[in-house]
Length: 500
Figure 1 (cartoon, one colour):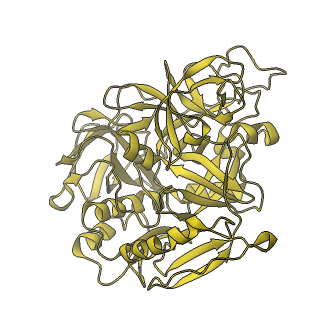
Figure 2: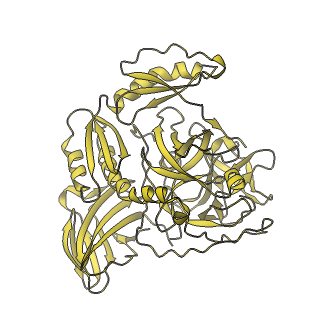
Figure 3: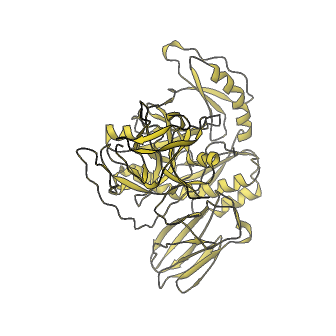
């Protein structure tokens, strides 16, 4: 199912700001162990540069706020929607014309989470998509690849055609589209068609190969919520449907059982799938836990952890800023390495891209498809769900979690403020109750966007009339002030179902 998207796909995110995940450092083996133990890494977040730490942690509330707004956008007709992005510490919503009442309500509902600015767009997303459709056949037929991509600008200001005239290649004549169109110099992102000895449950970021010459990277261990079937996610261009795949030393993983070639994503059958991704060198067993999956927006900072990157650098490549989402047949997302370095290498294909949480866990954002210099192309996790059904990353949470919760706390003398975002990864709900426990001595004083009651330490937040519905993949946000000292409030349950 193809849903309306202008700048970027979105999916449900899991961000637990208060966490007690314990992480220790794994050692480096002189040679790959027969069965890597999956030793967790020292907190991956602490290994990032201070500047990247600050920016990534600061985006948690922005992503939550943008998620709620996107849920409202996707619940109705596209209308004047042009794009959503994370800009200079706030969320920007670009809209052509007057903002409808339902979207304005969604914007107001997140004002406790983050500042949201609504900016006028010259064109709506529908207008830009229609214009881009006129350009793509010309670009596709350009055998010299002087013109190689059509980009829809997130702010709704027009289109960009990425061109590379290296070697004297000439840009073809482009048809009139009725919207502002410019050309920009950019190296074409090329597919990488090519860690070491992984073992079940199969994890993300490991070296995989097809028994012949093709080397790729596992993306994430995933499962189908409908029947709990485990899979390993990777890139479709790594191999054909039915092809068998192995780890770096030849132990069989499984076969490609589902494959979407234009979107470049594939599912490998697996006896079991793991809840971690590798973040150390090729012959290390250093991993971090996957906490869920994240929405992807322009301006968002991500990391990638392909097996060739691990061999060359011994660590992930981070500070990748999301730039564009293509709405063509491939539907890829493009990001740029802000430090000016390489974004990936041959053999990284299919590998994991993710957001790093302050507690050191990660959120699945997508899988590596292509790259060139400072640019990287990847497929976002929401498209996996569009193509293959209710697929979610395997996490350490027991049981088939159908919801995720982001719980952000700001403390002050004598109390604290909590902002809560609830993501629904199951069927749409109309009327919701979220329950959890507060620490002894803590009392809710002022709630917003929900009716909050508590009996002793047990707390229940219920919807108000205007935010009763949470669609599949959608989100709502509420918050409260409380006295006392905050805790790590797990588990949460949504209408009786345990959340991640």
